Image 1: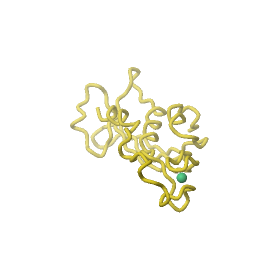
Image 2: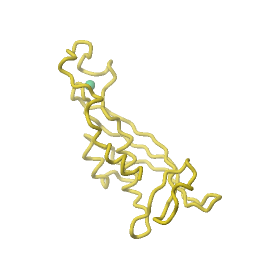
Image 3: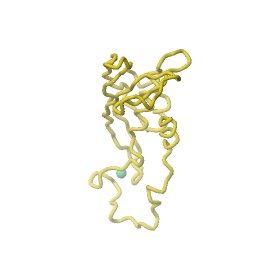
Image 4: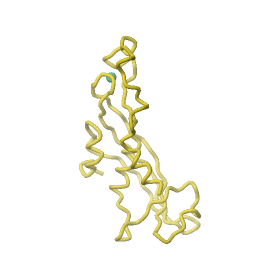
Length: 148
Ligand SMILES: [Zn+2]
């Protein structure tokens, strides 16, 4: 899949590889649920929060979704599946779904390894650094949406 359609992903990273590699298998499981699972991988460039340099980041992730309709009782679904609701056309927008997954897979704070970072962390005055974990997660809202 070409990454050029993933506008939101492109906005939150410095650069995205041209291709997102997707392995996906669609099937009905023993309980007649419509399931699709597989793997997503691509590479992105992030900005290191310590030195502002470019940082290559590889995303490799697996997924296992079950297609649900409004009336389905999500509580009855096996826990191994992540429910995904169909849109008004009765379809799942795979591009949007996979894009969400890639965005959620990004690190909250991008940092080089200490060895490869241009800024030597040991020489920094900690008084000037905002602690990373106090920054709001820009994707927190997205995570909440997915949980519904
Ligand atoms: Zn760095």
